[in-house]
Length: 244
Ligand SMILES: O=P(O)(O)OC[C@H]1O[C@](O)(CO)[C@@H](O)[C@@H]1O
Image (cartoon, rainbow, N blue to C red; front, side, top):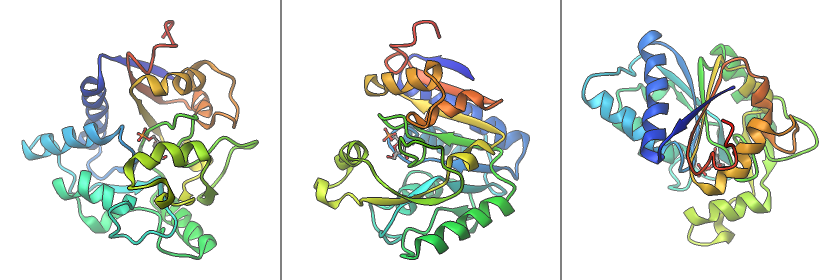
């Protein structure tokens, strides 16, 4: 696990975007695993600007997102389908048919998850997986648990995640209680992982991810065992990691 210290959110976003654009430049038809949440928005913005300047070309890239709320239509402004179009896909030259997000609109959880797993496997798994980290150490929507998850599955969101994500909804009652998420094992199949974190709220989770025991109680801690994982975090998120 390599830890890259960034000055602030803008610096973190640029550094993460640099790693992603290097992947696309080196392998134009690469598979990117993508994340939602507030943290990666700056990196998506930076990549979109570099695309506009002609520095990076997404025409052959395909993408697989980590997760989606169960029960939201693809056009619901709170859905991750919508988020990805709004924050990234609409601003670059990616073929929208090559972008994939778990189908939260399919009420048949088993079918939706099995179908998504088959697609990610058929694509050969991501060359690079971008991740954010939850305040409780979750990756994707893999919440603290007594075992690490494997493939795509339906999860009950924890109260802390519902609370944290309620800032993006009109009221906490509107936050969906379930989601479909890529499993931890699938995330670990990515050939490179870039995990971004900023702000003091993430400091404990970042410390536990990098220096705590490897335990499903902090799902991100398993990344210590990945052979090519880069943590890009700002000073505030690294406040409890002075040794990093
Ligand atoms: O970047 P944020 O908004 O803090 O979210 C962190 C994590 O939480 C999620 O949004 C899910 O709650 C993940 O997709 C993300 O990685």
